Length: 290
Ligand SMILES: *[C@@H]1O[C@H](CO)[C@@H](O)[C@H](O)[C@H]1NC(C)=O
Ligand SMILES: *[C@@H]1O[C@H](CO)[C@@H](O)[C@H](O)[C@H]1NC(C)=O
Ligand SMILES: *[C@@H]1O[C@H](CO)[C@@H](O)[C@H](O)[C@H]1NC(C)=O
Ligand SMILES: *[C@@H]1O[C@H](CO)[C@@H](O)[C@H](O)[C@H]1NC(C)=O
Image 1 (tube, helix red, strand yellow):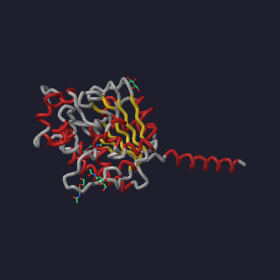
Image 2 (cartoon, rainbow, N blue to C red):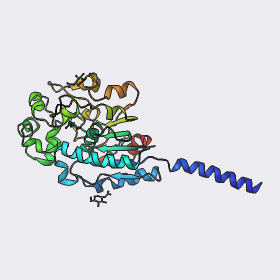
Image 3 (cartoon, rainbow, N blue to C red):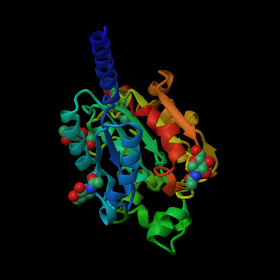
Image 4 (cartoon, rainbow, N blue to C red):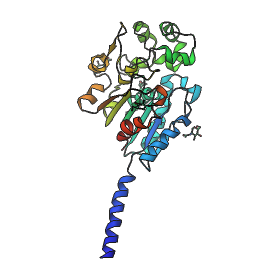
């Protein structure tokens, strides 16, 4: 009787522990100008609540290197993503913070053979950026109304921020010069004219989670974190009313119709707190990291 009891407990424990170690690995892409170390505490929190999770933090493009052109970064990060995919063919999750979330989306599109299940985009300028607060970090005297003169030029495009600078009042220059955002939005053909499909890597995701909020302070408009953006009158057009969604240029509509696009608007969180705020981590991020 006693022996039987012990054995059944043992079997239950083995069964249970198979569940407790079954969290999928997580790959985290840090934000602009950040060191990879900024993500260590975040990684530790994930492990605290999901013991045994294997976490990868992007170690390239830290600090000033994060200002290198987005396409260049995308291609290199793509190789890292495929390496992790090879190590974990059963699947893993991807989190991109700020500029890192936009890089993550580009990587998913350009490397559709990836094995990512859920992608959490944490306050990332997915539809672009047009705001003086972010500019101040690099150019203390530049205002958003003038930035296009620098960013929409061949030289300006050597800077990552310029690649997703989306000035609603200078859209023709945006399409003419921007080497990144219109391309990954599948809004113009890539230069090699291959009519490459940017959709397959996105629609194969199990879930796409977009997190952002009105008190962010750096991402402008904050709605860009959820694919909303300014029209030419600087009014916000929500995702569902924008062309890239309506024409399903890179799969957002497909995901949404399937019920796999999850959008969270959270107030009271400043830009640099998204990955440090325990409530945000517990309520909005962890549930997608199973
Ligand atoms: C950060 O990057 C450095 C240099 O590439 C690497 O040695 C270190 O292990 C990385 N740290 C983390 C936490 O990934
Ligand atoms: C064309 O561009 C796409 C996207 O940049 C790339 O993945 C593809 O390999 C390129 N094709 C050729 C033939 O260069
Ligand atoms: C790419 O090709 C598809 C099918 O061949 C076509 O429907 C689509 O319009 C093309 N995209 C662009 C931007 O030309
Ligand atoms: C943390 O997030 C909650 C919402 O989930 C918010 O109300 C609170 O202000 C945030 N605190 C900080 C310091 O970001």
